[in-house]
Length: 167
Ligand SMILES: Nc1nc2c(c(=O)[nH]1)N[C@H]1C(S)=C(S)[C@@H](COP(=O)(O)O)O[C@H]1N2
Ligand SMILES: [Mo]
Image 1 (cartoon, rainbow, N blue to C red):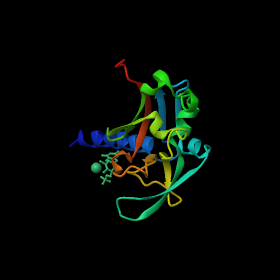
Image 2: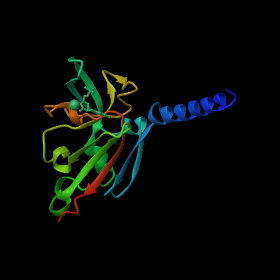
Image 3: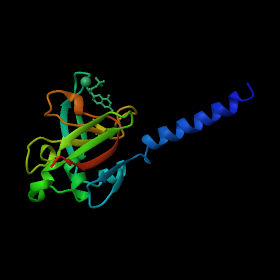
Image 4: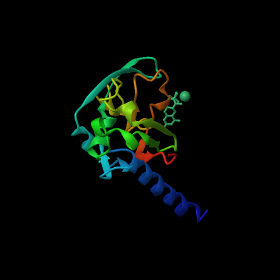
């Protein structure tokens, strides 16, 4: 029992730093890989990008207003090839979105680039005007035009651009 207290206290410290890193104003996502500039963005940083709002039906069956910024805007600010630059070998690039629970999803660049598609893929920080709750946020992708919500990845921690080597 003498050992139990320090171990327990240590666990608490580890747990609280993990929770702290994934929530609150210090939480951040990284943008890395095939980028010109690696980024580390907090909720506040994202609020400085152009605001995009989408209305989408969440798993509770109700419609909600999700707000944040387009994933393409974030990638553009990291110098990822989009728009007219998105041709040739750049079309072999893809984006891996990683979550705190190790869930990962992939988007190709034309799927998210407004010069290619009318679909909006939003990195949301807010739902109905409030910060996303713990367990969903601080960062969550919303892709309203996907018929299934499997790529509405919660608790996003990293956005990584990769290039297929199969060429
Ligand atoms: N981080 C994370 N996001 C996730 C998932 C997950 O396991 N982890 N599941 C996905 C799947 S498969 C679906 S259908 C939707 C809704 O999942 P839910 O019904 O478990 O909320 O969230 C998606 N986002
Ligand atoms: Mo699912």
